[in-house]
Image: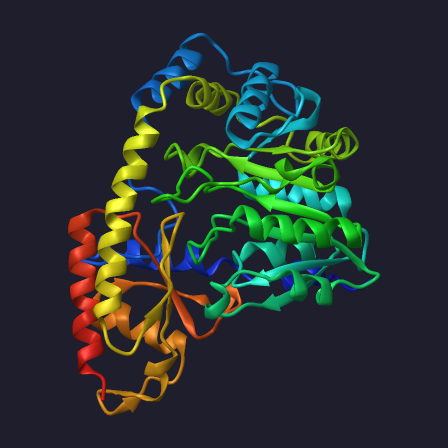
Length: 399
């Protein structure tokens, strides 16, 4: 038998956001002053009380295996958080602690997908969604949204996308890459379709604390018993507590699904890092003032970058209401010329910005929109100002 490799694995595309970040870091190492708009992580340090809890765990010798699905005390803290913040009732036997948000999603789709099951994914989407679905044997079904819809799927579009093979729908609010959030009324309308079609909704709420202005975060599973029974809620500590590298995420689901996810995780990874679990426990149960400070600073940056974008020629953007991203339609530039040559497409645009203006942006082809770029404002105000000045200079060079 010939030595061959996995067809499934070969069809998975590498993360373009990580690639952009790596390229920007490499240029910085060469002394280039690169402004990195690609980062999907807060630029703040993990709060001291959380670091101290991890150090204490190390000194106490808390370096052995834990239960595969996570520490009981951490599950209790997650259960309490779900109840107090999300208005969701998940007992500790309905919770799995995993190695970050991607691992949560991998567990979820491994537990619910059979070969050929379809998963409805609104575009733009976080680029890992379709790849994780495919690895689980599922079929991603892309539903495109519009700026007029604030890049949010409508009940009509969701219903039209469902077939006899549909197993689940992915909901992401606040959204990466758009920064948009779904209102209570919008979620109620989607919930009716989900219950009627009898499908799961995988609700990715990783950015739930990062909402600005008068808007509120609403968990779709909190809207009634029927939708609760169709919901798998996914969140974590990465974004809200500046803990991306600690790799702790968690899910709330039915006991049946939770049992399957726990079993899968027990064979794939065993428990999440023991030290990181102790840090996560402190994050959820300790003082929350640092989270509030981060939200305030993100809100100030959001106001600044959105104000600058509105003044720039040739690009369009809806107002982000959460997370820390802006989603820019740059398609008008494709037929314009730079140094005597057409821009052509978003990939070339991103290359020009990086090579000639030292700005690292994320081209959103892998997010389902090849007409857009994503700018993260999880960088300092000084970096934001410098980066927007460079983007302004580039746009004024176009003819």
